[in-house]
Length: 432
Ligand SMILES: [Mn+2]
Image (cartoon, rainbow, N blue to C red; front, side, top):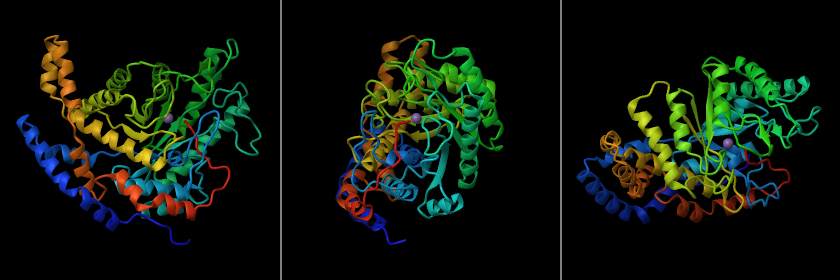
């Protein structure tokens, strides 16, 4: 393999010198402000340093809509180049050491070799993802009318076998979870029998569940609609919860923020799943209308904060069995995917640190006294504090960039990759 351009630690160190002065100044000032509120800034910086979120392999390519895809320059052309881009994100933000793969888009010829390649970049593998929402070239049986819920047993068996293959690949890669999202459902009234499709789903999922290694979990991802516009089989968290209860302790509900009806109280769903011991984790993104897959916190940053408020409360209480898998899931039509994924990772760190600022004693007291205004203002006090110096300091201490976007742009990474990676057709990227 020829030498590929990479952003070096020295480059980041040099770039940080420009912003280092203001960072120390702002960090000290914020530290004094927080001390007046009885908070030690170093405790928050330690929290920020510990926060991690996985990136999706499919997120480093330009996604698209149902109408078109507009590929960007220098896009990764295969899983090895996708990992290079993931490593670049990790180097700059230092909070994204794991990558989630989608099979067969990322199917490796040699999973052990791929694991070694990732490890050399400082990366490991997060949850596996199966794909039974599109047909692969030469596939004898079609998923056009469903996969795990298809009326034809042969199609269901084909879809089950694919999921088992994902788990097998994941074992070699060191993954510990398998995520199942299906597009199954109907577009017209009468097209499907609601009860029978769910029965078939559970029957199929039981076979997948039985193939899980002892220390694995399976994540069920629900989605309101699309591609089924009338009746999606796994359409909301209630159905998802029913299914994970039926399957067993290794099955949990995954929450993709874009997969709910507008205005749904997602933070309350999160709290319920924590309470029931069934929160698998997240696909973070944001949306204005539906499953827009915009960068995290770009439309509803307060909602993101409220979700993290629930997560941090559970973390601080030490709720039994609480270990959510944090992952980004977003698709990019108009931005450089590396920039978008970095910005989302930064937004999650911000929401996480802000949630640690909530005065939980004051909030509990306000709730006990039925003082709605004081409860809201307690949350707002945490949400409105600018914690940028804390998360920038954490990045710098971990060897990352104080300003990841500026460092990335001045590195010339994308231009270098454009020369190294002449475009080829058929790049796998998508919205899931
Ligand atoms: Mn998702």
